[in-house]
Amino acid sequence: MDWLLYAGADPVHKILLMLIAIVLFVVLMGIILFVVDRPRNPSRWFVGFGFTGAALLLLLLGLVYPAIRTIINSFMNRNSTEFVGLDNYIVAFTEPRFLVVLGNTALWVLVAPLAATFLGLVYAYLVDKSRFEALAKGLVFLPMAISMVGASIIWKFVYEFKPAGVNQTGLLNQFIVWLGGEPQQFLIGRPLNTFLIMVVFVWIQAGFAMTLLSASIKAIPDDIVEAARLDGVSGFGMFWRITIPSIRPALVVVLTTIAMTTLKTFDIVRTMTAGQYGTSIVALEFYDQRFRQNEAGLSAALAVLLFVIVVPVIIYNVRQQRLSEDVR
Amino acid sequence: MSTVKTADAVPEVPRRTSNLSNRARKARKALSNPWASTLAVVIAIIWTVPTVGLLVTSFRPELDIRQSGWWTVFGSAFAGEGVFSLRNYEAALFDGSTNLAVFFINSFVVTLPAVFIPITLALLAAYGFAWVDFKGSDFLFIAVFALQIVPIQITLVPLLSAYVDLGINGSFWTIWLSHSIFALPLAIFLLHNFMKEIPRSLVEAARMDGAGHVQVFFRVMLPLLTPALAAFAIFQFLWVWNDLLVALVMGDLNTFPLTVRVAELAGSRGGDWHLLSAGAFISMIVPLIVFLSLQRYFVRGLLAGSVKG
Image (cartoon, rainbow over all chains, first blue to last red; front, side, top):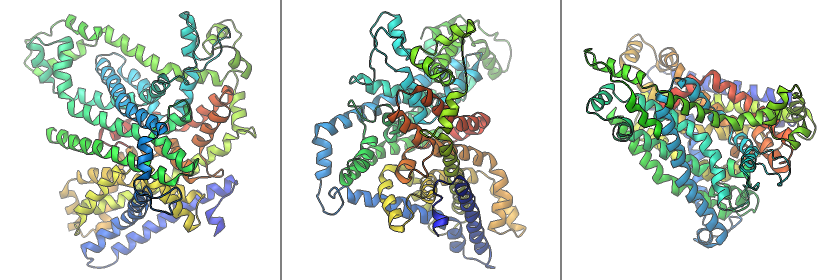
């Protein structure tokens, strides 16, 4: 049994386990399909649950139940043995340390999606008229394939600091020195450091925004554009009065989608500063409280908080998506 | 915004031709003005410079990295002095202290089942919801759809303690299972939407010929769903390969993928840019290849509203 569970450090064993997992799963699916197909006149209920049952069971045990547990734990003490009411939430909303975290999170949710969407929009509009469309789009889109850890390392190197007088190795400080300034330790000073960390996120997400917005700009019917042109609309007026209103649903979807990603992202802050120098956000604090401070109750409360902030954003998103589908 | 205004200068398209949309298309072509093109290219270059900087660095000797900026190589390479080598990659992959080769294998072992299992499960479930008209199917489908709002943070800790209770914590199985669970709501939703678009007549024709649900699933649905499957597979691949949170919470030293190890290096050896730069690119190379070779499907998936939160 242990052989099937743990591979230890042996790479061959690991790969064997991987193959076994896939084969086992194929066999399992085969059995399910075989059973579903067996009866002559199966009831619809039987067939329906044959197809959906495995997934539903996993979701119930792996998503619904743990979520409820976390909500319960958020009202319990640090090792989930005693009911403490709203204490964890009170701590999260009153202690100065956590107020910084909440403030940063609010800043992230407000600034990062707007910045990424704005850049994506401007770029999509520019590129629509560009001769090198495919290449230019590809380069901006590429960071989407990079892990947030990798992206953070790329940008940490841009922000690298060497004392004045020594050769700079970070590009940003080199620019400052070239312009006659003093090199800075960018990731230490609040509140600039939070914005500089956001740059990494925006760098990744702008490509996403650009792709979706570019597609909906191209979907604007030609006759609308032409009619506006005949009416003498052009230049910035075209962008503001024709393009923006035509792609409004897509804009909202992009904005809210990035906002949701922002809330759940913890890799970037963790890799850049590990939450030091007043840069922590709720998604990271949740992890630190649970796995570093062993504060299960507080950590659960932060997770619930994350959920509570996400819900309205998602509801708005879904409604907008419905609307845009109606238009289509 | 100045570039937008230059659109004024574009000559009017002749109004004689009858086909309005054709003319509009021409007008758009004519709009490809040099200012927009230039600015677009400049932005694209700015976007790429940070990556290029780290890439160049990853091939430079350790001492050079400490002593001068990566941009200086272009000068010295011109003078015939530039020294590039794969030494950093060798050190990052095989040196005892970093040993990324081991974690590279872990990344593969974690990712492949975590892509394959949820897609298969979601395919079955999506078919059940889309084409088997059973009692409660609508309600259950909406419930699955709604589960997309559950952030993984809220489920992680109890899931981990469940694994501990079962005695399977720290194995690859928990990671595969967790990724599969988290992927299901979106995967089911997406594949369901694609399946619904398959014409009813096609399915009914097959059923008239005596095909059961399983045959319809394999003979009619699967072949038509290939693009959708490709799109979701790329998503899930990038998501799992690049994931840090699940790997960190569920795994241990024997299962950690590259992301965990590279993030750890960034914390413990933040100044060793020869290792960090090479390590970062070792962790990026596979998703970049997947992404570049299958970008078409990825974009299509994005546009189909498949957005992983």
